[in-house]
Image 1 (cartoon, rainbow, N blue to C red):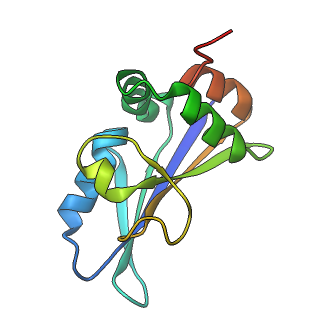
Image 2 (image 1 turned 180 degrees about the vertical axis):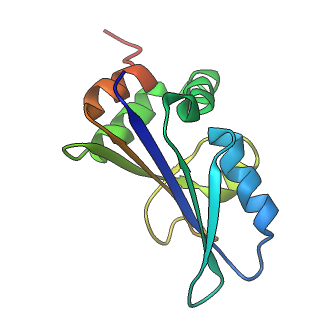
Length: 134
């Protein structure tokens, strides 16, 4: 697989604990490099990784939760020429599960935005979430 760059970001509301938000991300993607940027209300947590290892935990969760077909649909909806963008529910991530979300108004604390840059997004999706039916 070609070089992959994973970028994850989410707002940290004033009522949220930074460590719990980091834990939610790590439950899905493992250890990443973090940066916290102040914004109008609260702050923005940005996390990055530059290799396929950052997606191994996510790959395993998709299999454990048996949601590869649903994930495949969502991932293909977020494909651009050299990237994939999708959103995850922050509270569900904290519980160690995957729940895809819309960019706004679906997750009370705001979603986790995941942006994966790679040369062949469709090939990456075939690896992450291959079809389970023929």
